Structure formats: structure tokens, C-alpha cells
Length: 445
Ligand SMILES: Nc1nc2c(c(=O)[nH]1)N(C=O)[C@@H](CNc1ccc(C(=O)N[C@@H](CCC(=O)O)C(=O)O)cc1)CN2
Ligand SMILES: Nc1nc2c(ncn2[C@@H]2O[C@H](COP(=O)(O)OP(=O)(O)OP(=O)(O)O)[C@@H](O)[C@H]2O)c(=O)[nH]1
Ligand SMILES: [Mg+2]
Image (cartoon, rainbow, N blue to C red):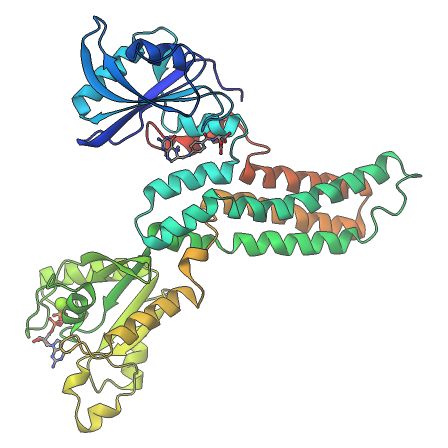
């Protein structure tokens, strides 16, 4: 678990031409090695002071003029000595500087996520905040940025702590009664109800994994329905450009089409699909099979129906989506007259005129969210949810034990709950888990 003593180096900026490119070193030799590249900087530079310096090659020839920034351990991102060289953003120049740093035997290239991993190992940030760093880098919607930023500032860590602290107290109370039955008498009173309430907190947190996934990855929403209902026209309207082919011939759309949009800050991948009908041609049948596959995979299916569809017909189209939630709309509402105008399936939209489209967007978001702002979501990941599930399970067994079993068994289960919960914040965590976790980071992070 202790970090090795190697000094690590990597580019902290993307390997593409840009205004500025940053080479970052962390570890005991960081300052000495970096000074080799920027000999004009004082032997003991003022920490956190930006020096303007020449970066040179081995023979002393100037390669660039940039900023030299020294963070003295432990006041740095990693908790170690850190030096940053802010050069001009030339990928080739940065590779030269990187190669020079690597000539020193004390230096090796950083593994993916290793800077952040060291920050965790040195206790600068807990695991939820380290993961929020990766979430922020990967965020591709405003909601994802805001939710990751909340995680970075410790929102999830705080909620985990509010569960971990009372659980630890309970465990201490139980152990106290076990070890010093005289002195601690009664400290295990109410254990059953304390456990029950902690368990519901764990379950509530775990239940946010679905929303966490929606914010992180964006929601997947498919338009589907009978051929010629106006799906592609509506898709184009929702996307804001003419992406899908539209024609009055039924069976126009074959392959499913996708487009990424952002609604109220939430990333949404929208799919247009091949219309469903009996007895299609061969290629069209392939499209229909694909539609059905996609319907099973999305978060919400928007059923687009032609005006005048009966309630029974609408119900049978709804069943095509299987277990996926369905939002039914009547399309082409601009063309409704007479009987059609009393469509049985609200709400009504027209891809052609745009009528009802804003309302549809709002309904889609409401169905995905059921209220609340996406950005306020705790980014509970699958990993967190799994640890929380094991926490809740152990607490469930503890609850039973509090009624029918010995204090040893009860305390043992509470201890197991604590251990599982510790995987979320990182208070109990294996090297193997850290390996998998930081692998998804990029190099230099
Ligand atoms: N140039 C640069 N920009 C960057 C980073 C970086 O490493 N370098 N970061 C990297 O991801 C992020 C900023 N994160 C940072 C977090 C903590 C410290 C730090 O020095 N912490 C010390 C001192 C705190 C203080 O004095 O307020 C500490 O925690 O002790 C630095 C950067 C985003 N921008
Ligand atoms: N009046 C009116 N016509 C529409 C509307 N939407 C689509 N149409 C027309 O209906 C026909 C079919 O439209 P599409 O958008 O291709 O329908 P689709 O559901 O994608 O059809 P398939 O891909 O064949 O399943 C075209 O002639 C469109 O111009 C609408 O809102 N109002
Ligand atoms: Mg179509």
C-alpha cells in the first residue's frame, strides 16, 4: 500500500498542440531532476512561486522558455515534492523534455492515474474524491461536470462518513460490552434499531447508483413506433438538424441512428429507429430486429403514434418495448382533424411544426429523473453500490443477530459491514482494487 520511492514523470496536458503543455514530476528527486532541465532556477526555489526559466537540453542549448513551479512536500497535489514545467504546447518539444527527465535513473514514467493514486496513498484525498477526479476529466455534460465537482469537494465522502462514523461507534460499543461487560453495561442497548436506521441510510445511498449512471454516461432514449409515424422528422427536430432521412414511404429508416444532445445539462443519446410493421422486406426486417434490441437497452422508449391510434393499439405498441419504460406521444398533431383531434394518447407533438416538442423534452426529463436537478446527484458508481450492498447485507444479518444470536455474532456482522463500507472511502482497500480503479485514469492524471 505504501507508494514506491521512484520519482514519476508524465505530461499533464493532452499530447496535442496547444498554448501550453505541462510536464509534471512527483517524488523525492523531482526538484533535482527538474533543475537539470532548468538550471537557472535557484537550488532552493520558493515553493509555489512561478519562475520564468529556460529549459535546456543535455548540452545546455535552450529548447524553450517557460514557467517552473515547485510544490514542496507535503503541500502538493500528491503530498510529495512536485515540480511542473509549463512549456509551450508543442508535443515534440514536450517529448524531448520528458525524455531528458527519464535519463535520470531515479525517474520512471507514471502509470495511469499514478499522481492521483499517490495523492490517495498520502492521505491528501479519499477514494471517492480520487474517483471524482476521473469523473470530472471524463465528464461530457454540464450535469456530469457539476456532479463530479461536488464529489471532488467531498460531497460523497461526507455522506459516507455520516454512515461510517456511527457504525464505528456502534461497533466500539458492542466490542466494549463484549470485552468489559461490567463497565460497558447497557452500551449495546437499542443496537437493533441503530442497525436498522444505518441500514436504511446505506440502502438509500445505494439506490442513487441509477441516477449516478445517468449523469455520468448520459441517458439513452429511443424513438420507436409504427412505420411512417413521423419518428425521423421528430428526431431531426429534437436534434436540431436534418440527420435522418424522411420520406412518405413507410419503412424509410433501416439502421438505427444516434445523436448526442444535452437537455437541462443532462447528456442524452437519442436514437431514431426503423418503424415496426408486419411483413417487412428482408433488409427492413433486419432493421426491425435491431430496433427491438435497442429498445431493451435504453432508459426510456418514446412511442410515436400516428393520429387516431386507438387505446388498444397503443397498448399493444407499448408492449413492444418489453420492460423498458415507455412514454407514448401522438405525432403529426398539426395534421389532426375531427376524430383524430381527440387523440386517445396525449401528449401531442409535431416534428414538422415543432408543436409540443419542448413539452416532450420536459416529459422525457421528468420520466428519467422524477424531479430534482441532475447536477445535485451523488455520483454513486457501480463499485460503490456493490460495497454498499455488502454493507447493507451485513447490517441485515446483524439486525437478525441482534434478536436471535450472541453479541459476538452481532458485533462480527457490524465489523463486516464496516469493512465493506471502508472500500468506498478507501479506509479498507486492497492493492488489487486500487490497480483496477486507477487503470481507468489517463496517464499524467
Ligand atoms: N498546474 C496544475 N493545475 C492543476 C493541477 C495540477 O496538479 N497542476 N491539479 C491536479 O490535479 C488540479 C488542482 N489540484 C490541486 C490540488 C491540491 C494542490 C496542492 O498543492 N495542495 C496542497 C496545498 C493546499 C493549499 O495550500 O491550499 C495540499 O493539499 O497540501 C494542488 C493542485 C487542477 N489543476
Ligand atoms: N403533417 C405532418 N407530417 C409529418 C410529420 N412528421 C412526419 N411527417 C410526414 O410523414 C412522412 C413520414 O415521416 P418520417 O419522419 O419519415 O416517419 P418515420 O416514422 O421515421 O417513418 P419510417 O422510418 O418509415 O418508420 C413524411 O412524408 C413526413 O413528411 C408531422 O409532424 N406533421
Ligand atoms: Mg424514419
